[in-house]
Length: 124
Image (tube, rainbow, N blue to C red; front, side, top):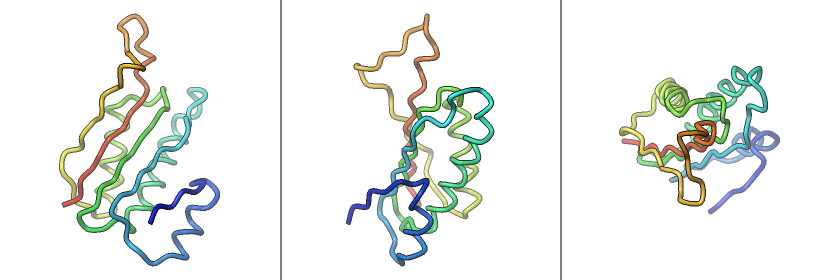
């Protein structure tokens, strides 16, 4: 079963109505940091999304967490993800960080272009 919904409007309602475990949960919200003043709020949103959905991930499930918020560095994003998963009691292997595809190169003269992040967490 595949479920697609607006996580900001329907996620909590959907999860409260269902009583199932998912083998894969993919969280890929739009950019949450249109300015630097949004960084703290974005970090909170990422944490809440992870904490809200993780109880519905099966024991050996896969969590795919993505971010295109350029004001949150990939190391900071990984820290948020790990802390949030740990807080929920989930045990996981070291995450796999997907690299940018060739159609989205990162060049030294424009480090801001390195904003796409996709981390895969395998539960154990």
